[in-house]
Amino acid sequence: MKKEITMSDLAVFDHAFAGKHANLVAMNAVTSSGVNQAAKNVYAPRNNHNAFSVEVDAGKVCNQKQSGRCWMFASYNVMRLQVMEKLNLEDFELSQSYPLFWDKLEKSNYFLENMIATIDEPVDGRVVSYLLRDPIGDGGQWDMFRSLTAKYGVVPKDVMPETAVSSMTREMNSYLTKKLREYASVLRRRHESGEGVEELRAAKDEMMKTIYRILCICLGQPPMRFTWETRDKDNNFVRVSGITPQEFFEQYVGWDLDDYVTVINAPTADKPFGKTYTVQYLGNVAGGRYPVKYLNLHMDELRDITIRMLKDNHPVWFGSDVGQFSDRKGGYLTMDALQPGLLFDTVFGMTKADRLNYGDSMMTHAMVITGVDLDEEGRAIRWKVENSWGDEVGHKGYFIMDDAWFGEFSYQILLHRRYLTKEQAEAFDQEPVVLKPWDPMGSLAL
Image (cartoon, rainbow, N blue to C red; front, side, top):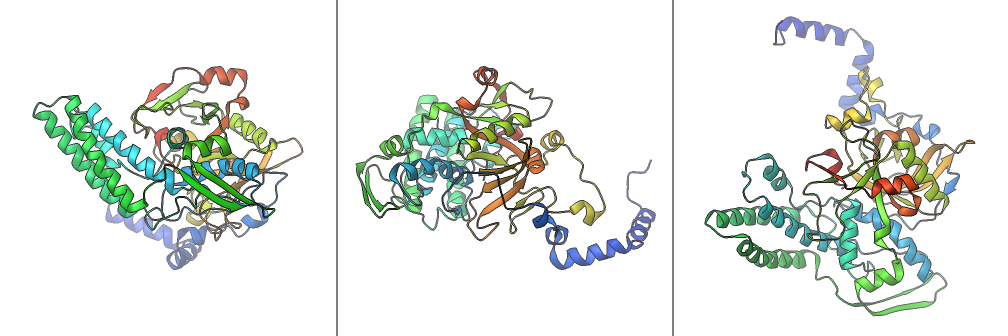
């Protein structure tokens, strides 16, 4: 059999293409307006109503702007409801710039610690190459956020507001990445010259002073203690005086972080359901008490937990592959929002497991489910989703997600342990299987 594409092949391809009027119409549409615009289904709004039988009250939609902090925004969009309730507030935002500062600092230390841990690995080997690829990216997972919150607490947005850099992190990340890769090369050369681990850690401490300085210049100095004032929805004056970020979290959010865990849906042969997993070298806080860990469950179990939480008036943090078959402007995460198969006259037929195994999908973005529409039997039809892209997209910032899309492209949810069955709770307490650093379940939400 021949390996190459021949001129005869090209003639056949071209004749087959030009022989269908639909191909020419599709070509005109796509070359004029782009693939997704041409593939948009005009019936999607008719098929996916913006109405839900179960809804949770939420605050105003936030905007992460040009940063990859969705995992922080989604976490705060759940946490802030506790503050609003306790202080009788109409609306409220926690500072997303505050955890960004500590995440960058902790990730820098975590990266340098990993460089020390892999000091005898070849620099062009797969592990070190992977660690060097993106040492300081914005993305994260819930357990990473939980580690930051446990250590540093939270502050209102007014206490550490956004800066030009927190809203557009690319430039800062570029310089931090340069510095961290430079430090990695320094540590490896010092090791080659005979220095031991303790000497390398002493050098790392000096390096971290520079990282801290860069972060303060970009994001401002984080508050260690603060006073915050506002008015509640009855116009009563509220003052919180001389409090630390850790105390503010304890008093006004009040979560026991030990009780919050995540479950995933990864229907691949290498990850049996009912087992727990972690990912090698995934984290941000070195020595933190919350390593990444999740329990793999069937998708119907994730659906059941999510519905029960919403009925109890608890919004649900979840991670999905938001770019798959979605209409960002219209606000539809639905299997019929786009029709690329119809446009290209083909079928996109990979299963969820295939997409994970072959690198076609993974968790890319975290949002919050705030509602669900149930049929007469209590099965989900569609879900209401609070995004963090501002109120100019979707339905004033909210998206409609049909249940089929939820099943195909959602991978992780956050829940209180009380929503686990006895069997699920026992399964969660197992020692986790350690996955390779590049496993798709180690992807970071942006």
